[in-house]
Image (cartoon, rainbow, N blue to C red; front, side, top):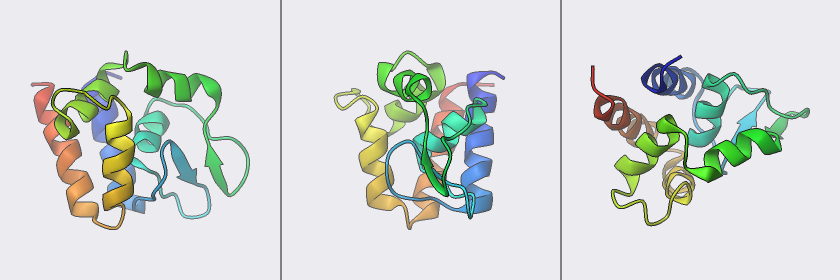
Length: 116
């Protein structure tokens, strides 16, 4: 998948299942994911075992390295100068996890930033 397709899929995951606070997290019982967790799922990573699960080191490093185009696009629409890197995604998510419209709007901005 392209980075744009990954963001579209991540947006769908949150739109269908809801959002949860906490960086790089997935709730297996109801399908909710945080913003970074939804991108990780869209990329095909599997969460660790357990009802509420974090992802493994490889997936977490992918987010934290800020080298992935989908993560950079999402971080850029939250924090335009990338001062906070991926932590901008975590802070925005944690402050807005009950406001699905705000989260989906950021995905829409990131998707649009990647062009046609």
